[in-house]
Length: 287
Image 1 (tube, one colour):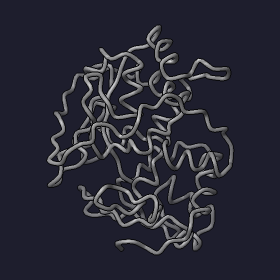
Image 2 (cartoon, rainbow, N blue to C red):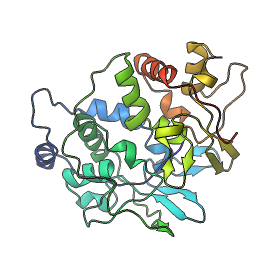
Image 3 (cartoon, rainbow, N blue to C red):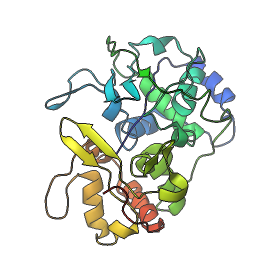
Image 4 (cartoon, one colour):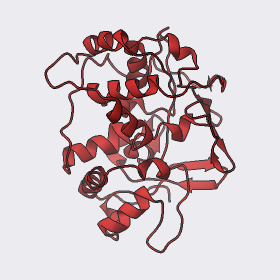
């Protein structure tokens, strides 16, 4: 569960420039539209924040058109319109990739929380450009969701420029499970206890405790370390992650993107489970 902001648009020769810029001109580099569609519509769950929601769920014909995702004393965060119908149509692929992975717009301004740039910096070059390829061709929606307002200072950057991130071999492995649960699905962003500076990955990885407020009321990100997960079988855990249903049949609450996670392959779901079971067992936090 949990989130954070961005934008996008255009294809062809711009992609070639982005490939060179991102250090992707190496053997085996192969961004694909199919991979981009799988990530955006599946485990990355971009529409969970960027698609307007109504009482009955996502608003028809408004996919990825942007909406307000969080309002508190620190900020009012607006997830941008990331379809070709927005200003990102004028961005190059290089600029779009940098906005997604580093949180820096073409004009140098910083995209703020809750977009999890600490994790997105780890998206591989191939996956990043696959997502760009997909976002370029989604239906253009003419919609302005507004601009985010931050009452807290934003950093000049979330780290040094990202030159290149190698692809992680796919498979039911701890390495790929960590990649999916981190940079792609950002499970560890929402399920890690938050401190004054954000998720406390060093000391509370997966310990839970963050509260999400919405039309459903209040939901709390649970502990996803073996402290809690040991009581569930792999099948039961898979049912909670991909279907949002507890072993007793009770429905789980948003904002976890169950509809997107449901599109994960069996292999990817198994890799995430394998990784979560490998985390250090920590006590529940804030529950």
